[in-house]
Image (cartoon, rainbow, N blue to C red; front, side, top):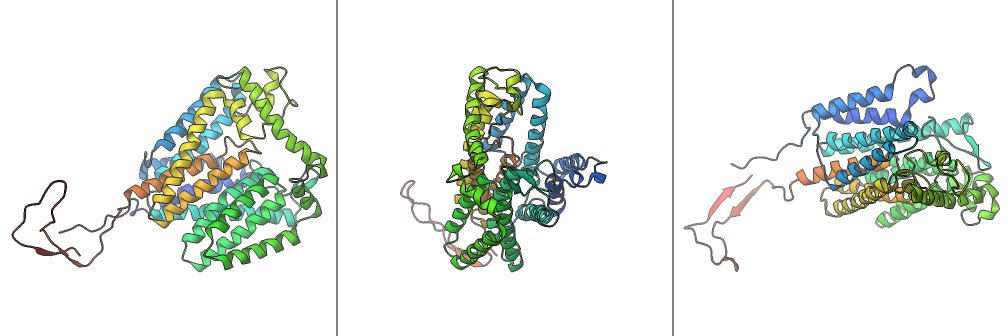
Length: 447
């Protein structure tokens, strides 16, 4: 008798693990206590985080999906901790490091707590819904109540919270989710879900343009090009989205925003925009000067802006941010953080590319492809922003490890029910020679 197919891990408790992961995701992204001060009486994020860790350790599978990506991520985090210990301003540096470790722990919880395809689909869809609520609420506050920030000579959209409300940060969070939105739309068979995800894509375009982030616009163009390349069979849908997007741009952007985006090609049109572009180069030079004087561990995580207190004659304006990934990694973590980060980035991209091409399941292949594109977008954002400790590095790692574990557990050639002939008289093998003939051929039922 041939046994039937094995049940997926986590089948008996389908909703608990994804629920606690999404609960923490909602607290991490929405942060309601930051725009509703009356809710600040209780540490909601910390409590949800502790609950998530306990549930994942009890019901999940610790060590699930551990690969070279997780190993290099751990090496990078070790370098960040060492740079913190050697920093001349340990308290300030530790504040950045503990937030980085917190997001890395959530990445591990994703890898250990997603035990089935249903869990993976539930989490990614839930993440998209939470981001939709955040974006829609932020846009409503901006259009109806005038919430925003006046920066670089224009009025810009910000998020509803305080931690991640910066226009550039908001634009990056929105664009980095678009690959997952598109892959879920490709994988879904529900018309209602496809319609919702199409609405999320349109909302993302509006949000990014309203933030006035030039890096966000460049990344939006890059991910739109990828979607067009992936959608050769769905040209009508893409054409409709393109027309709607053009109408959105025409009717929603102010003259100041249009002028700011024109400074990408013509920086002389706006003096503040030109100064902002020059700040990227100055930040890189400043990072190189810091690592030249402190090559081992740099100035410490989060201490780039206070480097003048401990090092003299640094290039650029005192208090200047790095504004680029390379300058930040070298200046704040030195060689102990920069080298492991390069290893981490290389293994993450290589594993995502391999899993996207080798996975037979459309869901896991789509998630791996979204992780690959999202990570490349992180590198693109790193050219114009300091995102070394951004949570997406570790969330992408957790989702990729979970998808990889599901791929390994999925049988390569699942049995199909039915009746077939199985002959025990096997043909000769050119390597080992002829096989011994058995007296007869038998038929067995493998249903």
